[in-house]
Length: 314
Image 1 (cartoon, rainbow, N blue to C red):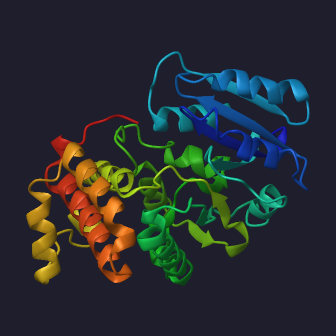
Image 2 (cartoon, rainbow, N blue to C red):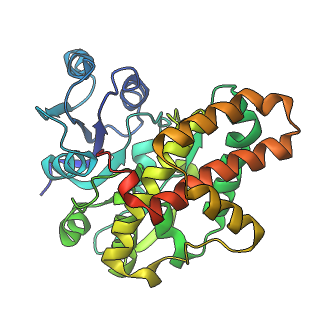
């Protein structure tokens, strides 16, 4: 028998300036029967002191685990999930600001005997930058529409940082896969495995949560696309090429992407992203959006095709 109905696991690295978003929101939850576990993946910015302040308040059943060195997001996630003393395990990334009914709403989807994975889609909060005006806000809205319209057999693709599952299902699947040391895809991999195991995946509009994301410029977004493309190869090596749609883009747009991908590296996408952001407000919006799309999508394809270019660990 678990002590709590739910555990909220918050993995973080360099999150001292963001942790107030989830922690203050969790202090205001309508559901009180839950614990919070913050896992600090190497303290590089005083995150330990920030979490200790919230522990000292005594308003949350809050604990933290601090790694001496960076072990990666998967290690942090697994440590938090395995330390939990709860029936339902909720992943809440350190830049999310949950609503007051967040924990209660996750719990509504879980009952004994049902293997359910629950997803809340991000509502990205973007500063008013050229990237946001030309690309970020439009793409965010499009992504959310596509997620909520996804068929049941495609919902696993949206497993990310605002999700929940039962402890039993987490243990059955063996946790997050520690092969994912690059940026991303540890979450999509978990969603895929839940789906393959026969679990029901729900995307709940009531769990849409403000997300103070880090990618607020074209350069940052493209760099993450490069990392994510490289991590995608881990997924396809594991599950087979047929597990995902063909990555090779076609047509004239595809030719442009493949051509730019040949020279897309961390330094080049940073340079091109900064140039486009400097020009975006002077260009017609459709042209600015296309240029940003070209840089981001070619960076992703470069990561897939030349994964050695993006080997930074997360």
